[in-house]
Length: 176
Ligand code: HEC
Image 1: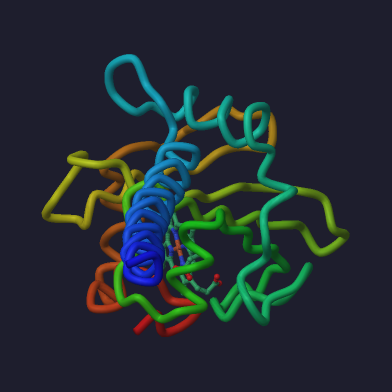
Image 2 (image 1 turned 180 degrees about the horizontal axis):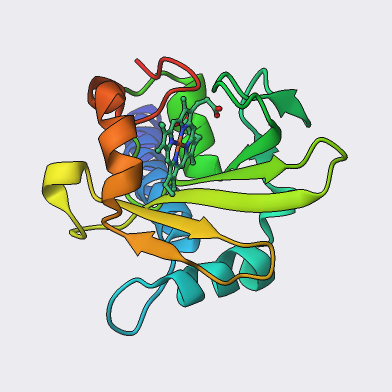
C-alpha cells in the first residue's frame, strides 16, 4: 500500500514538474520576445527606435553577425568598412537557420569612412503588422547623430534588398 502511494506520489510529482517546466519555457520565450521588442505608444518611428537601440539596449553590446566580427569590408562596389550587429532574436535565427526572422528582430549595420569614422547606420527592425507584404521590416537610414533622412517602408532600401526576399531580405548569410 505504502509503495503504491509512493509510486503515485512520484508520478504526480513528475507530472507537476513537467507542467511547471513547460510553463517556464513558454514564459522564457515570451519574455525574451517582449524584452526584445521595442515598445511604442502608437506607430514605430525612427526616433523611438534610436532611443531604444542607443539608450535602452545599446546596440554596441549586441553580438556581431556570426563570422563578421568587428570591422569587415562590404561586398558592395564601394567596399566601405562596416560592422554588423544583431539582437538575440535575430542571432538565434541566423545560428539556428530558422528561415525567417521573428518580430522584434533588429539588424544594425554601421558604415565607416576609410579612416574609420562612423558615417552612416542602416537598420532593419521587424515590427509586427507594419508591412506584411514586405515581411514587416521597418527600414531606417541614420546619420551618426541619430537624424533619420529615410525611415519606414523605404523604397530605396527595399528595391535592392527585394532580391533576397526568399532569405527574409538579408544578404549577409543564408538563414535557412
Ligand atoms: C544597392 C543595393 C542596396 C541598397 C539600396 C540598400 N542595401 Fe542594405 N545591403 C545591400 C547589400 C549587398 C548588403 C550586404 C553586403 C553589405 O553589407 O555590404 C546589405 C546589407 C544590409 C544590412 C545587413 C543585413 C543584410 O541584408 O545582410 C542592413 C541592416 C541593410 N543592408 C539595411 C539597408 C537599409 C536600411 C537601406 C536603405 C536605407 C539599404 N540597406 C539599402 C544592398 C543594398
